[in-house]
Image (cartoon, rainbow, N blue to C red):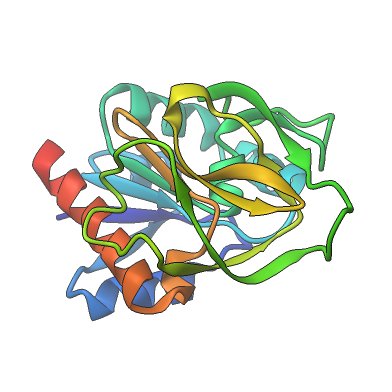
Length: 204
């Protein structure tokens, strides 16, 4: 299977590569529109700033190719900031447009608790989830963020609570994303990545 990690200059690519490798899954980095073409699946890892991510994708001419790949049915997994980039806008960078795969915006978590939300937390499942198949209901995942999507409509399949309720897992057709870092979440995170790879293979 040809899985491409979207390379935009400031991601957590090495840790995702290692997590996939431990599953016996090889991946390659894609930093040009040509490199995105022909992939069986795409992963958009993310750490950093919403505006910097979107500007970097724009400078590399990757925004439209990403949207086009998804519209063709290519499975896409967004991780952390990669989830947030799928939305229209973010409070973190009001002047920068997201990929707009979802019309809602990403909001700053209210300062009612310690920020950033960093560490282990549990999920609250709202709907059946392909990414969470085989994952115990009481599993903990690793989070590191101060912004989150508070709503994703029917695409929000699992939520988490820290300062506010926010989308932790979203799924819509061939679009998947987690606000937590599966590559840093131990065996349950490995199960999430394995589930995505299996879904990607089923669509191949």
